[in-house]
Length: 173
Image (cartoon, rainbow, N blue to C red):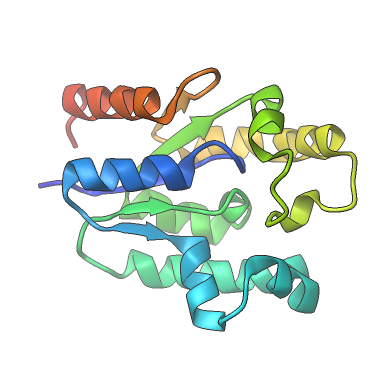
């Protein structure tokens, strides 16, 4: 039986794209925690940040993750990049199933998110400096939370997917 697979990592690491591909290959549902928040509130994430601030968004995120942890059916869950900041979330994610850290360098992130206006933590700032700050704050937390890490630097989504599938085959739950 397939267990839930949780994808964590920085913005632009491919959690959503790879999550959809992985769910299709494993024939289990794909769930995006950020999209659940958007569906529930009826507004996009930048609007939530504008109205409630990051703290308000993080509280909504913690509620969604706690609710998902209660579900028994397996899924592929793509989290927001900052989901691991809350210790409650880290515990829930690890209890849900296998946590895979999609790791990419700041240089790779820059290529992927440079023109994305839907990322509230990157607005009105020097992008490279901000990504480096976030990486310093979060990378060790991703490492501690994950059961396994895969680097996506210079790889296409299908290549990262193959690495994950190979790992799942050789390391069954």
